[in-house]
Length: 524
Image (cartoon, rainbow, N blue to C red):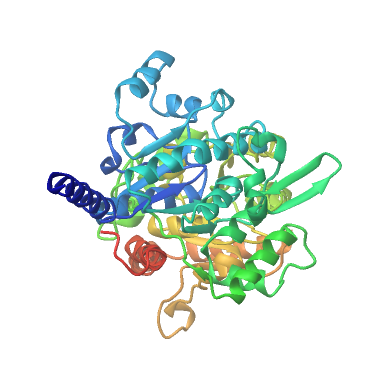
């Protein structure tokens, strides 16, 4: 009897030890359709993974870097965009497979599927099918595996609709806390039958279902918001615009999404965290520049050198004194206003003979319409306008070359091109909406009678060609000032941007949210 009692005590002791060991630390799993360059701390596979196609990817990269440096056990799940990763790393098929077969992925969980093999972006091909494949793998394998490693202690941070849907429904059904971040308001209505292999019947109470003639569909973004413990939106102004139904006469915010955001707001479960660029995007660290520089250098001289390199690479007329207006956004007529730019681009460079314009960006999904239009505009411009499909090194060189980074957004949750442009010593021009209202402040100069220099760019109000022309002309006027005036102000803008949009502050705000979800217990 005594021996049995000893063995029972030993078993209880082992159980207590196991429980203590596995409850000491809660992990964070970032789930996202894209990422920027991951930090080395994520493991040796990090060097080969970068599927960035927008600001979302840079936020993911910055979070991974900041969390791992603070000792948080951070994981990321993202699609295995084999074509993209091979091209960016100049690898053939055998070399890529050798990497996956021999390198321990550690904290990087690539969702593999033949569906993704020939895609450079998760939004190419059939985005709904891509999303269903991604969400199934997370539910059936990835989440369970990571939770098991940490004794069930896991916080999920899902990003946008492709990382929502059944992922967040499953997490809630298993009692796993979720922070869901809206980087945009798009959603994907995925037919339920695409989730074969997932027990959707057991998740039915957690799914935001709607019906159509083709059968039931899961609203991925609305489902994510519904099931999230907390929701973050990447801009304070845009959050207010959603809650106040500011865009009631527009069709781009799905009613289910705005309804769920308002419900979460009524429970004080929504907050705003403005995105901040990762340090690897600062001009003194950025790969791909002809000359790296900081606010302590001769900014005008450094930008001239990068401008000439950019002009030679893109076919623009070589002119180191040109004012370069730079469009580094996707060619999206539903949000970014590309059709407004196309309508005035040629006339603008004719009317302003010291101006050049560069567009670096892809069309939306499989739509190449605006790529073709921008290509034709560039071809007919006599070297004054260039259009290039997106590549990360070229895009970053464009920021270093740019005088002004501009756009014409109908709406904007956050936007990041203005921040990056300011970091690189460029002004920013865009419509006075959402994130641009939060971040762009009108330039005022002592030369114009202001008490002091202030501001970082130029805003326009109307979503039409006249508004865009007005904003671009304000920018051109500033860039015609003397080099001394521009140098003084561009250095000021670079320094102020680092203080205001500091990636450390963004990470601390997310950490505070994670710790709230973790019952107030620190993660590191």
